[in-house]
Length: 396
Image 1 (cartoon, rainbow, N blue to C red):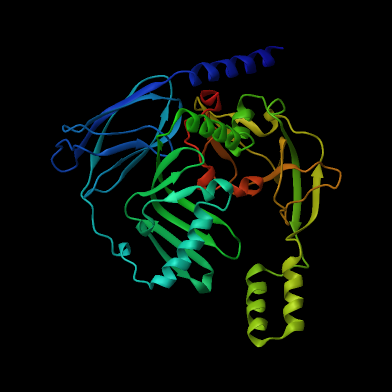
Image 2: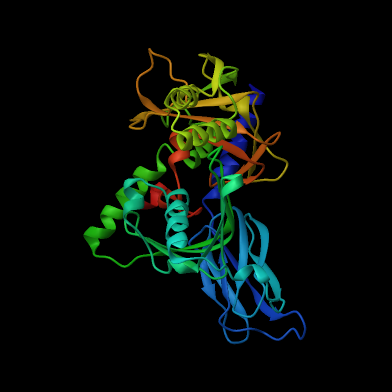
């Protein structure tokens, strides 16, 4: 009884902190002379909190929700500043010093127009996505994206030296991205991305804003952020999620992906139909075998615990986490995602930890550790990205 009371108290304290907003203030100066710098972009990455410094270098960010953020200061001629901060229940004041930028040789890539277009289409699909939301995304300055294709490694690499501006006309945001690094592996289809982003509201009529709010809510519900928020608030089942423990092994009948691609390319060039069909058959085999879904619903306390730092939570589980969202049906057929024959076609994701544990904050954002999403969550790209400070309650 006392243990249950303690859990209730911890959840109440978390909600009390979550309802508060904080002001972040400070001054941006040069590292050499400590002179204030005006018109510097200061923002919390992946959020809607952003401003420019005054002529003396001072700035203020108002109404910041609790959570862990990267505060960024960016200005032409200076190296970008980035620091992780944990916003709690007290105002934050900080001084930021910028160093003069050193020219990097990586900044110029020489390529033909045809190669650039081919690389850009691959980049856009991996970065923005192919969903209905993605179709309504307009990249204002696509040539800010620098790309290098590594055919032997089946890898496309991309980065930007300045903001890449994307207008998401499905969700009503103008998103400014600084792409530090981006790569997609054509063999594993694993995408890695590092960078910074600032969200701004697009102007629109009252009716357009109503539609945008509805689309944002639809995008949020069932997402990984929604799931992680439900974990720490202990509302997993009420919010429509079911989670099971899941295990599997690699399929011994299926060769490694790079070998399959190599053989397919070879026999296509040789026009050897029998060998080509054999390797296409191998490619169509499932990646996994011995898949075992333990149909005993897991409870939040079995995979999520409070971290020593207030406002941060630890996600840890053995094998894989099989997550079903019962309020939406899946429209995509995922060949490698196990689905029991007697299960309704609900949205389903498989979460795998690539580190011993993952740390997430009260906004449902993973801030430490790494994970791999398969199934429904793997479809979410930039077109489905909402600012970290977004809450569906605000869009009611």
